[in-house]
Image (cartoon, rainbow, N blue to C red; front, side, top):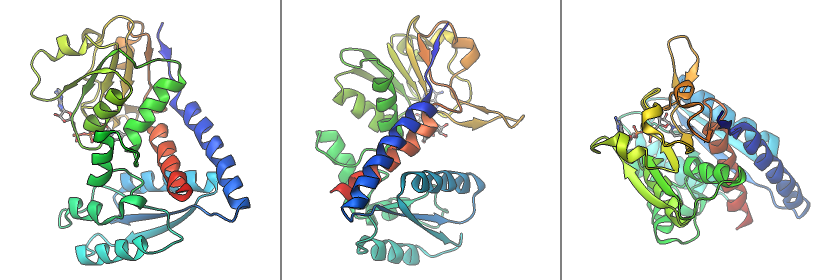
Length: 279
Ligand code: NAD
């Protein structure tokens, strides 16, 4: 039997803690404001944006939405970000990714004031994470660290293998595990003998974006397996990068999809908004 880590329950606990803190801030006349910008009407993005708005509402964060047409110019988007950067009521700015192809994502991310960059994607915050200074942490990897710690697992001294090296998940995940004193290996699409590398892990993070790719022969007996992937199968059911049924029983603990990493990502976004207002 493997223990199933309930990301939804841990995220609910974090949101309740934040709700209390936001109420106390309110008593002192401090409000927390998040601006959410969505460009176009991609259905997946709309679901993510709505979930973020719902979480804000629950916690007491004042969220303002900007729904821009898919053909909005880069200049118009940058002008809106500039306006929000100067708006004192706005503590955090979130631009839902991906953006349409005619817009330079990197330019947009670096246009957000680093002190309002609640996604933690600005190069200033990436640099802060790398050198161990305080800044905004990217939500998915930060949520995974919380989930591991709050489930009673320790990272210090453990063999951690991260599969995937994207800027939003794999690389910051590796930096955060290192910060927690893990012994970290980053594997990617060019890694040789991936099964051998992965099965060294006490903590295996699967963030490769390939449905059910990680089977029992990638997993060490008794490992903690964190599944970052999100995929919708033909039967409309969700699955992750890990073949859950296949590794169940071999791993000590696994995160399910849905109900694992996903809810933690939103909870950490809320944490970053409150942190921005606290500053
Ligand atoms: P990405 O496509 O940007 O990066 C995938 C990485 O995996 C790359 O670095 C690549 O080198 C590596 N990779 C690809 N195929 C591989 C293989 N066969 N063997 C080893 N490495 C391989 O993806 P991403 O943005 O990092 O997202 C990864 C997954 O996590 C996706 O399924 C995405 O939907 C999901 N995701 C979930 C959340 C959440 O909140 N739960 C957040 C972000 C991303």
